[in-house]
Each structure stands twice: as structure tokens, then as C-alpha cells.
Image (cartoon, rainbow, N blue to C red):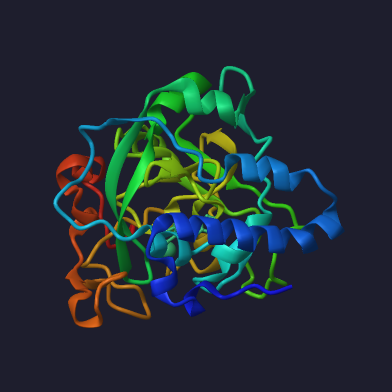
Length: 319
Ligand SMILES: Nc1nc2c(c(=O)[nH]1)N[C@H]1C(S)=C(S)[C@@H](COP(=O)(O)O)O[C@H]1N2
Ligand SMILES: [Mo]
């Protein structure tokens, strides 16, 4: 089986997006030859029916404007999705195995009653909005992404959480038969992230189904993920299968792995360095090398909207 590494394809070959999408389909059918043998058919047709599906959207007052969008190619080939490899270009290749249909989302914990939602019902729950957000990874790189979704608060209202629900936990899809790499980072799957209830209910917190006018590519967390634009990217769990409402702060993947490096809050904060590198600046992906450097903004530039959530907190201690 021949799989060409996306970074090895000359950019002249992939400039028009159509060509790139066709190539992705080509790559995916190659990948499925192996997956199909091991796991049986069925997955391919479900995924192919969904790949690149156009989503109808409305404009959103919560969009961020004024900065150049990162290209579709960079957003979909420079990813962190450790279930499908630790290399930035691996998820674009191996997340083809993610079975995005059928897909259900379980709601458990401190709710009136446990519920299950079908992804296609969730897609129709509210009008889908275009929201351009800055996206800042803890690794000090950033992008500008035109996401598609609606406020997570709209979904949370459907869940009918009890007043004892103080936190919400997101659990990502996990199936060890599909996990591409052998697993040497010490991560305990499934990937878990969480927010305090007021953070989850903030209108900027996006329940995300797409980007660039289309359903999310698998490597970006299909079919549904959260995006929390004022926090480091790892708080934004991908490919969510369960949402749990809790009366206590949940255990979260990166905090469990190294609590001195990845706090529960993980607000973007140029004044709190990571123990191994500075957070004062970032590198904007996709620009020529000498134009990449940016000053990192407190709360990733969303301080006016979300700063009040942290009034009275010591953000050096609760980093
Ligand atoms: N399930 C899961 N979600 C995840 C991750 C992951 O490895 N697994 N990586 C996180 C990190 S570190 C970042 S920066 C963002 C990357 O999102 P993107 O690939 O769409 O840019 O996803 C976050 N969500
Ligand atoms: Mo990240």
C-alpha cells in the first residue's frame, strides 16, 4: 500500500482545494484496504458519505475578525490527535480509521436523567454558526480557524443538569483496535478534558461540527468536538462520545500526566511560562518563517469577554 506523506506532496499539486480533497479520498481508500481486511467493511461507505459534506451556516456575532485565516491545508495536516499518532502530520493519515457514523453522545452524571443523543439530531438542534477563532496550542504555535458550530450552552440546556453539577467532563472516542500507534506517552485513554460549569456555559465555548464550510475532517475531531478559544488547545477535546456532569473537578488527560506542566484551567497566559518554555510569544503556522512570531495575548485575546470568569483567582496558582 502506498501512502504518500502529506508534507512530501509538492504544494503545486494541491493548491486547488478540490484536488486536495480528491487526494484525501484516494488516500483514504488506500488506508481502508488494510483497515477493511482487519475489521470488515461498512465503515468506508459511512465515512465516504460524510467526508467533505457542506454545512449550511449563519453569520455569528461572536466571530473574531481581522486576522488572516490559516489555510485549510495547514489546519487539516498539522494536528494534535494523539490517538492517531504523536507526529503533527500523522492524524491526517491515520484518523481515516475513525468511524464517524453512526455516532452517539452519552450524557451522564448530575443530570435529571441520563440521555443519548444521535449526532445527526445534534447537527440540527440549532442553526450552525461560522465562528473564526484564534487557536493557541500549549506548544506555542497558533492558527486562525473558521470553525462551525453553536454555543455549547445550547447543548447543555438540553441535558438538564442538576444544580449540583459544577463541572463538565468530555470523553473522546477510544477503541484500542483502531488506535494507530503502540502508546508510549503514558496517556490513559480515553482522552478526558473538563471545564468549570460557568466556562462551559460561556457563549464563546463552541460545540463544533465543522470548519471552512464543511463537516469536520476526522483529524480535527469529527464528528463533534469542543473549542474553547481562550484556553490552550488541549482543553478542546475531539471526537466526543460522552459528556459527564460532576460535582467535582474531573481528572483530565494532560493534568494527570504532568500536573506541573498542564494545569486544569490552562488559560492562555503570557505571564505564566510552561516549565520547559516561555509562553510570551507564539508561532503562527503557515506563514513564512520570519513572519511567524506573535506576542501571545492574555486569554488569547478574549479577555474582554471571559476575564470576569476568573475575577479574584490567582492565575499563577490556578494556571
Ligand atoms: N481526543 C483528543 N483531543 C484533543 C487532542 C488529542 O490528542 N486527543 N489534542 C488537543 C490539542 S493539544 C490541541 S492543540 C487540539 C488540536 O486541534 P486541531 O488539530 O483541530 O488543531 O486538539 C486537542 N484535542
Ligand atoms: Mo495543543
